[in-house]
Length: 402
Ligand code: 9MR
Image (cartoon, rainbow, N blue to C red; front, side, top):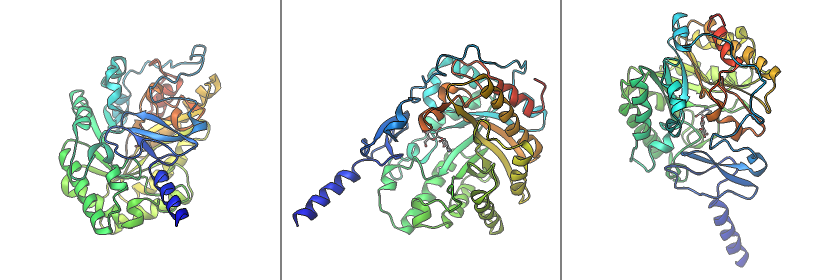
């Protein structure tokens, strides 16, 4: 008996700590704020603190102050004279060229000056419209932060891709730890999607309704909704979003779709099934979190995209960044230029690819260094808002002359 009690209290201690990669803090978070042994709680941003393996915490990106080591002097920079990627994209038939952002970044006026300029025609809130931040307790909704992004974008005549409604990460703690049954989970999902899509009704171009539903091995990703409700949660989410905001383009969004293989096949079959059964899905987002030197040719990526557009859907590159091993070198910068050109060029090869969004435009606010130890410099602008050759790669990819 004594040993059972000892075990029980041990379990209690374990469950009071977040596992490696789990959330451990942030606005709206009411779950554990410490990590299991071997992991350290690192603030990724004000909404999301994550337990990272202790060995992976030598770089801190949360403050946005991770630098390109000795500075980027001596490295090649942009030589392009193009000053509006959005205007160039539109002149070539696209709807927008955009950037992700996040509310804490708005205090940096050097940053907002570029973000809300005519450089970009579209904005994605990187965190503030997600489930955890918007429904901190059941049926209590807070859209203030998302509204700030939306209104600032509107004031700059930029359209918004809203992100996201059903995802395995950044769930509110009351939901992940609530032990709800299947029927209740369906009600909770419908309520959440209906609330968020109604709040932004008529004001956003698109919603990423279902995010990253397939894992890296090509299986449906194991998470709360897949495990307890099954794949039908996807149809449920799309239907609720469509009922609430009939004009928003509804997307399924995922990474690594740029490559053929098990994950791509499962996703394509899933989307085929959704289309066949009449689920109101309108687009597939190719996130585009890539690695310098590992980006396929524009033609290859375009052929991946074409398999979705053949189903009558549009596609977009929704979270583009191309990371590299630090420190940056001249060779890597030039390879990154080619890689950006291929990614953006793929969208240009596909008429129904509506636009490209970079997952923040500056390395200063990139999510990469805190997640991938020893990697960074993934964005087209450096920490000091200087354009890199990657910018010229985008210009070339858009069909401009650099
Ligand atoms: O950029 C987001 C970062 O600030 C958050 O800490 C992170 C939480 O997991 O989410 C990041 O954005 C992700 C996006 O929502 C979905 N695709 C992958 C993105 C990078 O992790």
